[in-house]
Image 1 (cartoon, rainbow, N blue to C red):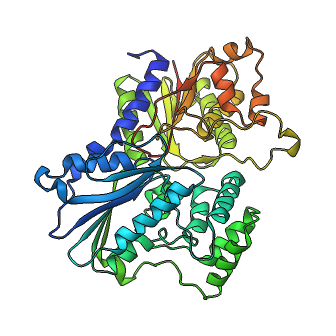
Image 2 (cartoon, rainbow, N blue to C red):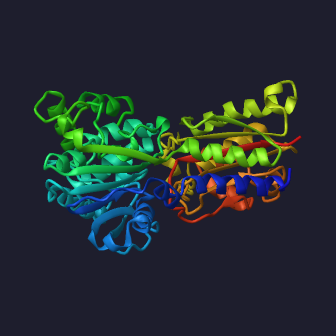
Image 3 (cartoon, one colour):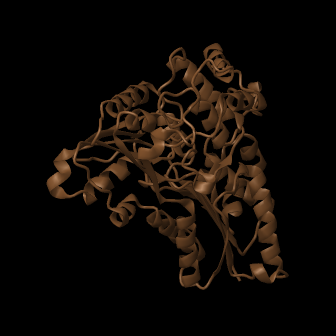
Amino acid sequence: MLLAPREALLESFQRALLAADPVRAFTRIRPRQTKGRTVVVGAGKASAHMAHALEKVWPGDALQKLSGLVLTRYGHGVACEQIEVVEAAHPVPDDAGFDAARRVLALASDLGPGDQLIALVSGGGSALLSLPVDGVSRDDLRALTAQLLASGAPIEAMNVVRKHLSRIQGGWLASVAASRGAEVQAYLISDVAGDDPSAIASGPCSPDPSTYQEALEILAQWQIQAPASVLDHLQAGAQGRKPETPKAGDPVFHNVQQTIIAAPRQSLDAAAAFWREQGVQAVILGDTVTGEASQVALVMASMVREALSGRNPLFKPPVVFLSGGECTVSLSGLKADRKAAQPPRGGRCSEFLLALLQALGQQSRVYALAADTDGIDGSEDNAGACFDPQSLARAGAKGLRIKDYLRAHDAWGFFHASNDLIYTGPTGTNVNDFRAILVTA
């Protein structure tokens, strides 16, 4: 290897981020102009950087004709010349997000024939672009969102519920603009398994294949005690007393085009190319890895052991296992008697990594990194964490026991103490999680 293992892990993460950079993407695509107005709206952790990138490639003599509004998470904003950027709360929406979402809908509703709506959509938009249907209050939607997040339900299931409580998501944003004769161009950065546009930020510009009945079934499956207003609305929809979300084949989508400008697989491929430059075999396990973070770690630990054994020619060291996707962390198991203890800290990446370290134990040839490509892993301000053969020794010298931190869902606390946290700040993109496990020769 040309770089030291830990440095190589960090560089591979940077290569993955660069492959998903919005400026690079829009330089390739060059969105087209229209004779009428061009209004830009959007939401997501990458939406402000997408807006900034769009302005950079938009012809200078036409830049003054651009206008619009995008929402992003607090701390993820970037200055734009023509497009207003609003920061709001994520993952539980706040009033700043609700108010801005209402303005986004109003902008789309004001368009007409000859106009163009450009929608910039990325992960995180489900929470940021929240505008509840009539009869469901902001507080009720916030309470529901908090329960869904703690339940361990996969993001796809959560989004089915949110689509059926929204005036924007589930295809409604595009429907509003296109039904008035405007063209809709949606540009998406994917953070979901399979890159399904209807699942990215709950698909504001996509036909929605899900139903009210499915939303009710998801609440039952994950034992969500939804507010009465939420249940009333979903039950009315399931009984045909509320309009369903727009479906495939609806003529309104004839004037809607969607383009995915960055996706997890591109980032994994870029990281794999880097590792090959380092003389390391790269095994891409896929960009659709989901499930409970601690359980996914056990599966990947078995692959590492296979590589360490030297018996499998497919995993001959030096080898790196790369994967993307979005795991979950279920907090519902925390007991009420732990309320006074340290609250959960960290996110799915650091929890995966801590469970992997516990499963493998002290290994002299294993290094690993797991980080969220948006730069924020869960509750804290780190992108994720990494470990090396000395991590357990550094933690042990401070009296730390992995099982205690896993039980408390405090992976951040463990890796903070072992000096293994990774900080990038907001990256300007969001193609889900990035994991790299290196087994040296």
